[in-house]
Length: 256
Image 1 (tube, rainbow, N blue to C red):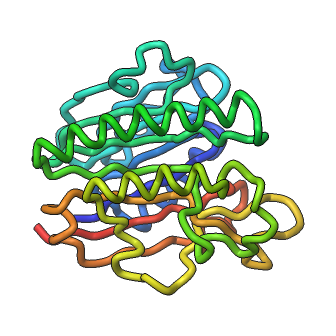
Image 2 (image 1 turned 90 degrees about the vertical axis):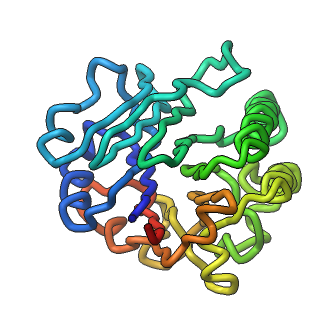
């Protein structure tokens, strides 16, 4: 079974890119972030034609998350539990093939310091509280998406450049580390502990061409799913397509 995550950076503006990648990669489940469209403008018909059911939580200008699946999706939650007044669409959760799939788009937090960074940490705390509840229930769960965190120096092409960036601040990395301490497995790092696996390249200064990347997109797996992990990777070439997102799709495979 192949699970993927893709910050699409505008689902309607990059629909051709999404459909082309779906046809080539054939993931079973996809978590999308940054839909950048209200609910009524989500391209459900085109995604159905591509062979995927979908659930989503949109937002007029920014943010927005969705889960696509080749099989039945049972919606559990739209919005982060315990954060009813969250001003943004950043979390959606479903049951697919007896697994809990949580799709998230964690706040960027820049500029640091400031209210946006405070919101990032606040959202992280509420997300961690929900993650712990899932973990304590012993459910087969995967928390997938754009975490907007580079957990270690291996995850950023030039660590010294990002010392004061919200994506790499010690508080952000500490919050991610506390998540792992609950018992979650970072799937890509489980299989590739010493290899840079960038998922994002800025549009500026030819970052993609220079491979000046960041690893922002992660798969955190509960114990039962971590034991089924067989593969992981990043479809880096997609970032080089015309009208590409600044993120590339990342994926993992699980044995049944």
